Length: 314
Image (cartoon, rainbow, N blue to C red):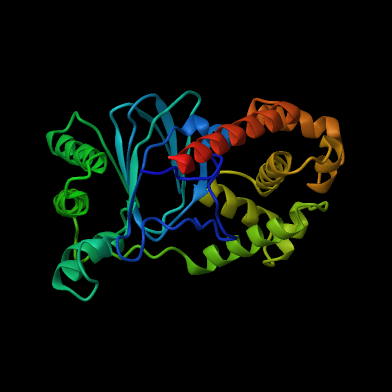
């Protein structure tokens, strides 16, 4: 078990692909025990990964955003998220979400019959995600098996072997619940749209300290402003301008935690011309003023450093 992020932040590249490695090449599996409330913005921000993910709402309530869909999930609910699917979780309270992220290649080699017949069809199916509740007997069995995987991670006895064994059973149930149809079209995200979104995101990430307009963003991909708005709303549920502000605030939060620069200097360095506006947006987003946020992060870092020092002495 290990924390998913450093200081409650998902790290992604310009395409929103998560940069963290889940497990290792020899054992591509990782278990995380997290609380959405501990993440910046109280959300596990937009990201995707080549691995599949299964998570469970242990306590609290979360909003699950994926593609153009939004679901409010209560405790006792589980979710399967297919590979390469952009998603996000939000909460307005403490919400524990134990989860596993793993490569299906852990279950069988890609050249094998099992992978080609039972694993690959799920990965390329039109099914981007599934939500499981205990109201349905078959779904309850999936949830019980997922909880067993979590329990195994808290034991050292044959952990890897028992995990692989239980994951195989879990995958069989997911395969059956997916309702694989050999004649169904494969899930093929629009390469052109993804490329356009990636170009626009990269432009924002590179130029966020400067004044950027919607026209500037649209010009990077030679699209109309309405088309750009549609791509952003359909894929990441926000407008380009709101994404830009959100990204600036994230960069400002990082500078507050890592430097002694003044709030005024950080506001200007991250593209905010008006420090009062910056402070208001920052507090609306983080529920802390910039000064309070800096103190909170430094206090957390000191606690973490103290724990690491004690561990070394042991």
